[in-house]
Image 1 (spheres, helix red, strand yellow):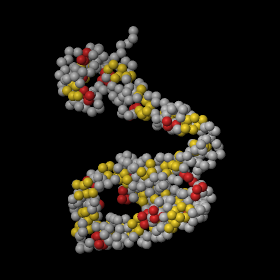
Image 2: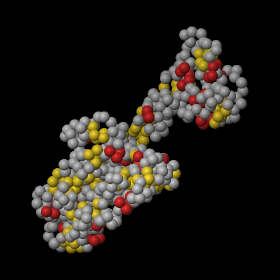
Image 3: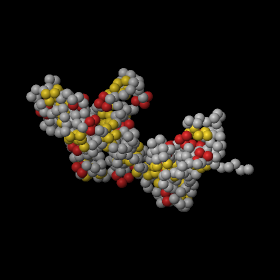
Image 4: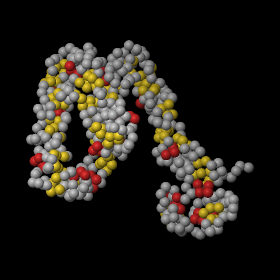
Amino acid sequence: MTPLLVVLSLACLSAQVAAQPCDPATEFECASGGCIGKARRCNGIFECLDFSDEDYCPVAKCRPGEFQCATGDCVNGALRCNGSPDCSDKSDESGCVKILCNGHSFIYNVVTRTCLSCQHNTQGRYCDTCKPGFYGNAKVGTKDDCQQCSCNGHSTKCDVTGKCLNCGHNTEGEKCEKCRPGFRGDATKGTAKDCQPSSTGPTKTCNTCNGHSTTCDATGKCVNCKDNTEGTKCEKCVKGFWSDPTGGKSCLPCACNNHADDCKKANGECIGCKHNTQGFFCNQCLPGFMGTATTGKADSCKAASCPVLCNKHSTTCTLATGKCTNCQHNTMGDRCEKCKPGFTGNPTTGSATACTAGATTNCAALCYGHSTTCNVAAQTCSNCQDNTEGTRCQTCKIGYTGDATKGPCKSCMDNCNKHSPTCDKTTGVCANCMHQTTGSKCEKCKAGYIGDPTKGTATDCKPTAGCKCNGHTTNCPQGVCTNCQHHTTGVYCEKCDTGYYGIATGGTPNDCKKCTCPPRSTTCIQLPNKTLQCMGCIAGYAGALCDQCDTTNGFKPVGGGPKVTGGCCAKGTTCPVTVAAG
């Protein structure tokens, strides 16, 4: 005889055959011989194998669509087994099978010990795997655990990461999005005929793909572009990568700290920073948010409370703009970070007595208008603004120029018509003019080039005739240099490749030298005084060579500090191997 199929909730599992008599004070004895808690008697759920726990129960007072709690109260039936108790005695969450079935079924067969009617594209004894054609981790317990494989109609299988398996119809790629060598077409259309044999087959002598492919279709279009490139000539970087691949160089990944999906192809500047971040590399938190954006987590920048944002000197602010109001304790500024005129100290300590009445000395005057916090006795300023630095905020920061004793400092990029990030702090004379420009403001085209550099684009100056590639290649179809050598890149091989620094326009094989910043930075520039400046130090490090600890954000020297082999900067007491010196 076929065993009777009994479909019950998880609570039924606790109704075990009694090895000893039930406790009449706390338990109800099922007619079938099992014991359940008294609170489960007449709760509307069959928990005894013979259903005797629901026999001779008082008529329910709850309306259809409601659930009656063990206390007698009624709650919305839709709230039953939703993971959050709504009855005062939590009986609406008693006996649920959600956990056993990973949140994908509420029906459990106690005879076969199997979840029934798995939902959310799951399958398996406990709804613990994804159905064919779906991928993910069904054990997480949400309705979105299993996502449909996205293979452009060329496969129904993919691994747990979503990478397609066994691409058909002459396609290949993680999403079956490309035609295999020897076939051409658009694999993303999603039909079995997307990729057809090339009429003449791919040619192995194709040399018009900028070094990123050796095969073309019958029309001359490059196929199977490598090095993260795409386009009819493999002349563009795919989404998430940047550089100029026309010279045979590989495309570099966008360094957006996991806060953006793409960046500008010309310079790697991140586009559309998410997770409350901003900056060239999405490396800063937006106004009103605090944290370390470079950790790369979605919650790196969290909404700041007004007291924290305002250095504990105000409880009111506009988080959207990051500006505090009603600064107390003799402070002022957008974040109550400055002392009012006539007071001295450092408000960023958060102390209510940080700003004390001083002599008649005006900090704004002492600091040339760039700070209102100073030490009268030592004649030193703190919290310099307007891109200034120095004991009295009297000089411009690296990358800025001007007379800080008379006003704010201007960025070198603006001063140099967008053709150089470096210039003299005082005179503003630009150094290392790029894009075939020259002059104290990079305002003129070099000999052999013509155009208007004041427009501020990388193609302002174009060659008048012949190859103008700064001695780094002899290939320049249509005046555009290709296959740049000597660690150079750019339309005219006029820039040092990422990870190298120097003046690529010098015309020698040794123009660009390797940066000595790794592993704490991958890029660097050469300053007007010929010294090296590392760019984009990783979290915890600061200084021109990324060899100092970022004490402002709580990092301190560990194991002797970053200049010692085995040392580093950390908030704890141990060094991550990846950033240890040496």
